[in-house]
Length: 558
Image: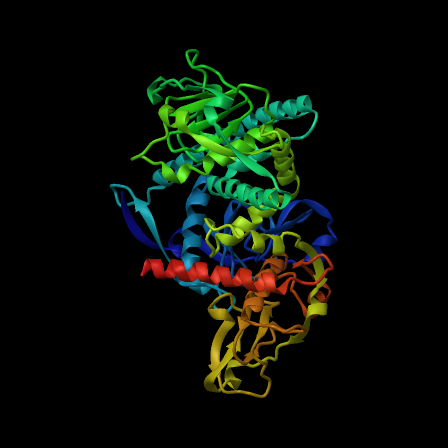
């Protein structure tokens, strides 16, 4: 495929839209015609009214903020700073989507922003690379074919997702029936362990460390047991990929993710198991309550006596403690299983204490699982997940997130206008309404209205909601609010709060500015201890770990 270069003005007529305010539109009432604004989400649409000024089947461009381009299929009205591209060719929805992609890529390339607007003049001079046919003409047929192929793939993905969702709903119904048969809830461990293998492994390690710590305090004793004395066992049946028939039974193979399930089959020669523990060739162990099949790389352990689901999860966690010993060079096979000895809690008579294992797992399900997941995610930002720190976990396990008014935490001061003509060259940061370079848009020597270091700048106009930690004194423009902390602040806390403000600011925009008055009444969620005290030490350590993680990533690239 060959490509040619064209100006946007070669293929589109470029004009401004007729400006209509929301107040004007409200007189006509809610209706079916879109009201297109400069926002960069929802196709630029900020509502629907019984009024329009522009005909559809055109592209719109925001010329005030980011330069976002959207296809408008219906008649519409528009706010100010909305430019219109009307095709000089016969355009349909498919072609419109193709051009939207190109025009939006151009916005990134040319770096449009609040301070560098995408005006009509700028749009006219922009260059597009378009496919051309053998005659050197724009190949619109290729564009249509290309977009249709993408849409077809998306439809297949959506269909596949819906099938998986249906299967999951059916499995959930079966799990619910199983929970009802057991009379007590057994939690959602299978779901938790299937979502993320690393989280699964971490939780299993954590379970054993918590168990060892707790059981030591309670004076619980441990005994040695052969797995083959507790379970009947057999190996799965070999089934090549070419011979697998699509069906409803999960096929467990060697792997850490999704409980070892790779696909769903319906082969009649495959034995169906349930209520069992699986161990694959790498010693990955999972509990399967519902029906499943498995290949020859998996051993199936069926309890010789009735064992609760919780106790099976406990034993599976113990089995997984041995997985570091195995790999492609040393695989876990039937002869390994026959020699495998595990340590399990015993009662005063030296018998397996299934009640203790069951109650312990139930307690983990009820009190600790989500906290362990959260702690794992914290560790993976910079810590070592292989070294589960029980003391640290216990320190922060009871954190609760509560609402606080921004005005109770910060004194909010509005920035001061300073025009380019008034600026004097220097080395003082001038913070403007931009989303890049920590908000710095100029270097000045003007020093009559400076804000101190260790504060946070938040834009309420332009790139609304962009928040930055300011480590040195600065001048803030009149589009910026400056937040003075009412607590002992530092870099780590400021970076955390800047992230919170940036998230909070997403609900505001060019047409709904985050003014000082609104910000004072806004509330944010923060981690607290039981008495409602903000967990500043947790925040500091969390951000410190994030920075360490990023530093390690950067070093690894060098």
